[in-house]
Length: 67
Image 1: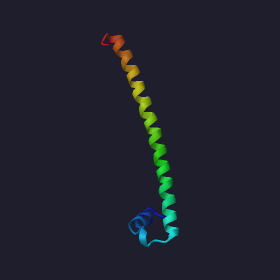
Image 2: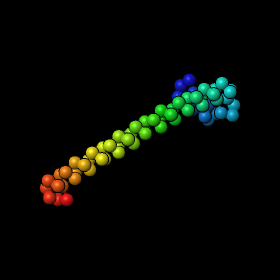
Image 3: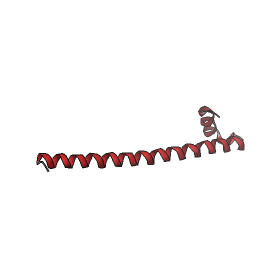
Image 4: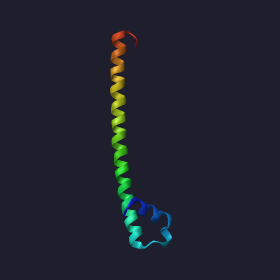
């Protein structure tokens, strides 16, 4: 099933077969899980980047007597 077909199921779900509903639900569930996993990974990456930046900033301030 293509993205267009999934959208059609979502628009017209009351008239779609159970098979179409199940397929669309499986697709959406998989998409949700992938998106959630990506967000978690990106959140961890963002936290690590922020921590690294502030660690370097503190060292820079210490060296230049600006802290």
